[in-house]
View 1 (tube, one colour):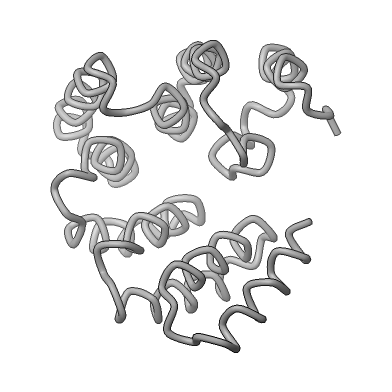
View 2 (cartoon, rainbow, N blue to C red; view 1 turned 120 degrees about the vertical axis):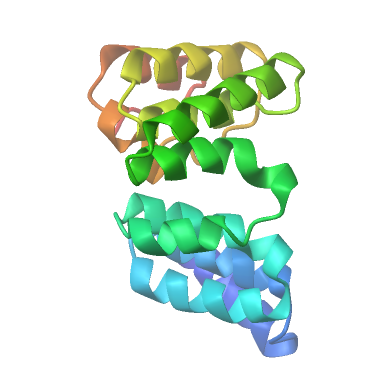
Length: 178
């Protein structure tokens, strides 16, 4: 279905090549297809049009592909309202434990106030290889009926794929296990 989504994004961009939302969507689709370099190029072109909309997507790809120096540079350009999740992941990735811990505290505080979703906390903990916590928050996200459209393809959940709890979550969501 990602190939079909990509084709639809091409049709949309033929009509309006400057549509940042479509560029962001296309970048996400390419990311989910594992075409990271193409995704980065699309997202960079979209950043030129609207930096606030697209930077978190590019940051996620840099983190997922281990390009931590670029992730840190991109993180520093984010609007402050988007920082707790990305701060936790970025500071963890570059090895600044103190800043990562501070960001995690803020992330969990915002989660408690329902500003940040359980799904996003799960993504963060999975990235940090704290799998039990990631699965706890993923289960909460299912209980909260959070729409997790990319749970099977999210690159940050790859380390969880063989975990029986992750498979049980997919079954609860009535998603195939393959």
